[in-house]
Length: 426
Image (tube, rainbow, N blue to C red; front, side, top):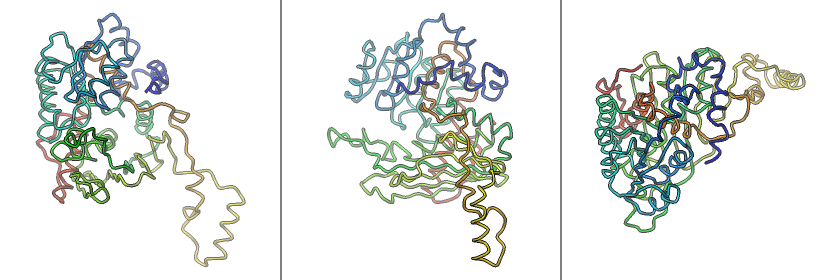
């Protein structure tokens, strides 16, 4: 966890060029305003934000770790229905009060904000109740289990004026922000396609202390509580479409099945969804959890170059010429094995292998994702009382697109983007 602090806030801003071009960067990434030194000074004299963590399981404890490292945050409540999670979280935040009913946290008038890291199907109930109670909300992705619930959470945020953060941590990942700046500068030409994938090789199960806790602990495997790979993994990557193109797809088509892990689960272990836009451009998401060889990546492809932010690298289409002896070998092979000329240098097999690319931030990334910066930005927003632009909206659409992909998989048909879920954004 401490790896996230290898780049602290000051270094984070320096890496992104804030010291030289703050106004320019903030015009493209306005949600980063809370990261500026000016904003840090404005909230420096405030009392720490009093925060309750609802659902301190594995992900909740990860978020709790960042809160405990932030001197502007005071974790005052821990709430969970599963006692072992409460016990583990209490070791991290020993001064916090504990409870099993989230309403105790919301009934405490001294609580400023809550972090929600409970199972997906409970997000709407808790997030809406929290905002209605005047609490600022940080909610784990995805926003909610259904399209209707997702819209209800967003509408409550707009109606109450309470802060709503959805943990789409790529918005605060230095590599992704720098990559997006490069893309918007035109460095890679027109972005004509986005290919995303997230592969693992495990059954996605967690050990059980008792068989009767199967659905409580392994809730991700059951459709009553989860949409599986689409809402747990896909929502991160399909955010690229709105972030890069500033558009919504007109058609969504997906397929999926339980191919390998036939162990009683209800959610698919192999999915693929295509999002098609009005100009014909496509974004795809694929996930298989019985083979991890290709891991995860977003391949953002322009006519002048390609960006792979998970690797932290970019590649131009034009590469330096091959070494002389390789060119000679290729010429020999052409003469010996073919009387028909090949179609230009794209035939040369060494071209792709020699294109090693360059690092987006000038060096291999040695820190984790942007979660820590996202949590810090939430604390700053709670103290200032200001909702950063775009964060709630990007989280909303990432969830809506993930849920539409899942719906297409289940109904085995192409779906249009439903107008009733379009919001005043983009």
